Amino acid sequence: MTPESHPSPTILRRFVAIDGWSAHYLKGGDGPPVVLFHSANASAKRELLPLIKVLAQDHSVYAFDLPGHGDSEPLPGGETIDVPIAAERMLALFDALGLDRFKVYGAHTGGALAME
Image (cartoon, rainbow, N blue to C red):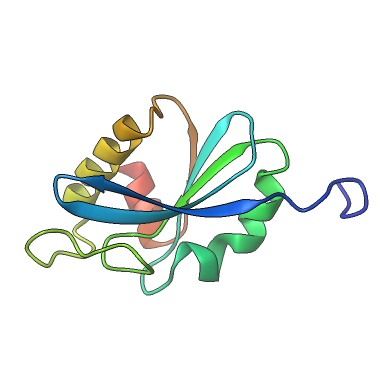
């Protein structure tokens, strides 16, 4: 793929709320779903935007800000990156968005979350 052969996909900022907690994510593209998680002390926009643009050429990409990072709120109780708790919350988000089967990518803490 070259930039000349594919126009840059539209990347949208979205929020989803579960049980009083609001999570921010970037959504782009259309096709089989891919979920992306950034590393700690980052955000989806700051760390994953180049990857989102490439994958969104032929996938539906969902790049979440981890709890307490980017524009996502900390988890209730002030938890930011307690991986098992964050994983439970992310599963609830996936259910709310109708994502039941998808590929996943994570860097550093996002990788730990993806493996959980």
